[in-house]
Length: 205
Image 1 (tube, rainbow, N blue to C red):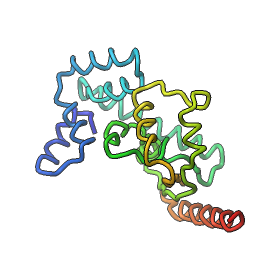
Image 2 (image 1 turned 120 degrees about the horizontal axis):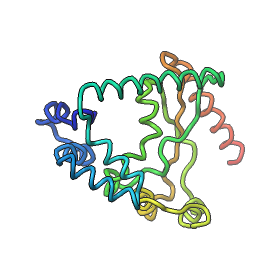
Image 3 (image 1 turned 180 degrees about the vertical axis):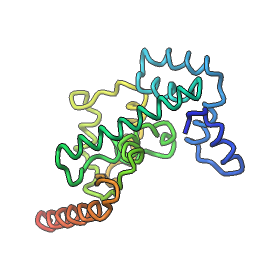
Image 4 (image 1 turned 90 degrees about the vertical axis):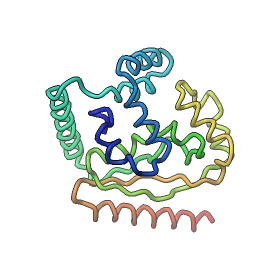
């Protein structure tokens, strides 16, 4: 998306109403490369994760550099598939997001936390989400206890800020993922998991 620093995307969306996260991303692509690199370097001392996001917005210096990156990406896709098949996995149940749904005032700042979803989107693996539980007071207590979790980046601090209010009772789900062209497997895992969770709720309820 940012290989050309968002030039093509800005042309496609120039007449559209854009959400704030996308507007900020496209704006980042208009800043001078030297400035973005300088900001990424400064940020790397306190927030390596944020610095890596900034670094991704500088694009590529040449067409050969771009195709070298495409080759690396395709190799990674193949290695991921080989690792999956090597483990003889039918499907994977994994997180959706590292926190409950963030509040609207910070969602545009924690978009990179969607890596759990972006990973399988980039691989083109079918995935679906089902609710599992809800946030309770004990969850919040542990969240703000440094013995359980320490916020060591700007994004972590923003997630904590978003959890301070309105988080109790919010649904928390998991993501079910299967191999390409095996959507029926993904749906079956979601169905079976949802059925087991409902039986558990009925048992303890």
